Image (cartoon, rainbow, N blue to C red; front, side):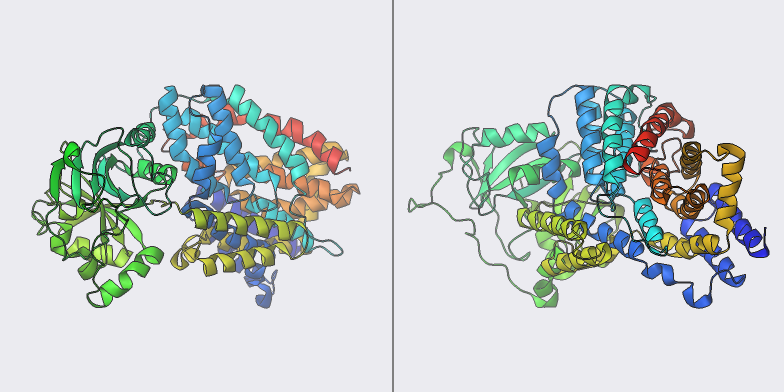
Length: 632
């Protein structure tokens, strides 16, 4: 080996060792490798950060932003309700979940797809009497397999495509070039997971999760103009609430409180339903019933005590016999800058936080109206969790007690300030996706158009998805604050730093040297055996370190192997793409495996029981598919 080859091999070996050690984050290790390459003259200083402008890196960041738009608009929630069977058995339920995760992962970030479906999976596990992990692991594996089907499905595909584009006389892979191998692999994989795989998963109880449990919230939702709930009977709504483990306590119409409204009562636009539900149920019922959170439409300082009557005494019409409109109350006042800017701030900058009220808190005995939360703090009280009691007061007039858990909405700064000033303990920040049909359609349309433009070759993928992000920002399908929060910056830094390192491996000849080592000692010049060696080596590495890092390290080695064997380089690059995506043996090989570790109650050694058969299936199926669609 030459001096440069020795140095780059040492840097790669040290990087792999650091990845395995896990003491430093992957992006830190990647930047360290890049700096070392510059220090030893393997990468020119002016080219050190060229990787951050690489189309693959830009595409990854843009896809993450577009995925966030699909999440927060409720588009995925609608798809979930439509596709998943309501009362199916374990095999069909797990098949539907894994298949849906695979489809979503093909067109959005697969970590985001898993995060969206995890609450549904846990709910399904409870209904079927299974341990959460028996549904979560099939879901995670389905999402990983789905990422192999398209260019944007997983970062390794984008890295391989970008590496190919950097080679003389070659271009990047197309949007659906990966589908020919990835789709059959995913279909067979999902069938295996549903029929056999989930039965191999250890049935552990759910371990410590990142959240905490409170009692159900008491909250208010309004029937908005054009809602499908308007005109329905109370019993129809109660049937839906029962499905999501929520219940309707009372109904408010024209500031008249109706206790336990009759099941046959017709709901109208402007009615306010007092519900008891947890945060997860709120997500689903708002979407299914087309309701909106009642965010205190009137000024906090305004309002009188409401009347409380039995339902039978409340007329359905006003005294003139005319139907009452949705907005019968006085308009909200505007008291100072906070009130004037509050509405737009909440819509674009809003966060949700749960706070426990301490006994010494000065807000004990006060209501949201007394505290003037909106005008003084620019925050909303959305719901209250109170152990073992039910109240007849409207939410904004409810007297707060010590021990209550408040679900508050506002900017992070405003929420922190309120918690500090009022002696409340912030418990957790929650995500509540308030469905918006118009934005869901726009977010879906933007993603579809971006994919189509890239697939048809009208624009490069990076430009097409960047234009999609711009459209999302202009149409507010992604709040402006969330655009940068949606990007997984450690992954972006990892990719940007490792791409020049991968280039140094190729330019120094180290990649060809490593390929020769593998081919001569193992494959002995046989192209098919060499293809299997490259894939299996990649799969072993990706189970031990980040999949994107594995793709960056193995791409030049795979290309070098193909050149030395005199065969189609695309076959070997595709093998690296498949191998680096399929991490099923450990919780550290893929972010989705890590994500289910706690909620599934798993230990490090639990993954191989289902992961090893899945790996063997991938190898046995993908090798003939690769040779068939990408002939050697």
